[in-house]
Image 1 (cartoon, rainbow, N blue to C red):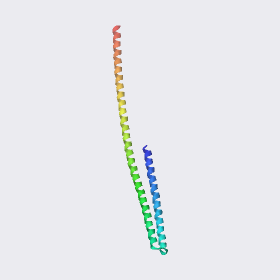
Image 2: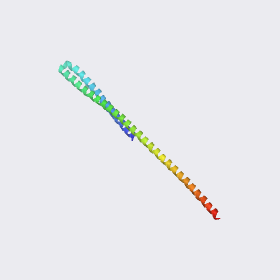
Image 3: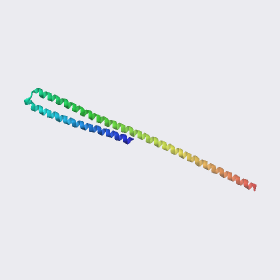
Image 4: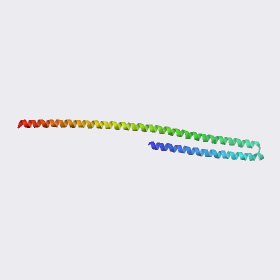
Length: 147
């Protein structure tokens, strides 16, 4: 169960890392597209007006801000998932240690009970042997007296 939860947590971290990598790639592409747009804007400077350049620059800034925000969000999600994963592992390890301690205590108590029962059986057997020996001795004395 601990291994399964660890595997699931690890899979979730890998998924989030893959998402972050994809978002970073999208960010890189958006940046490249924005840079391409800026180069196109420079080419349009000769043919178009200053207004066109301002529009393209603002669009580039907005796309870049969106891509950077998405990348930051993905990085934060990966960090939170990793921290959660660490906390879950620590909690599972603590629970596992408690279970092991309880199992050891139960086993020790059972062993002590078995040892006490064995000692009682041995004492009872010894008392029975002594009683039988006494009865045999008494019977022999009675037989001798009868003869």
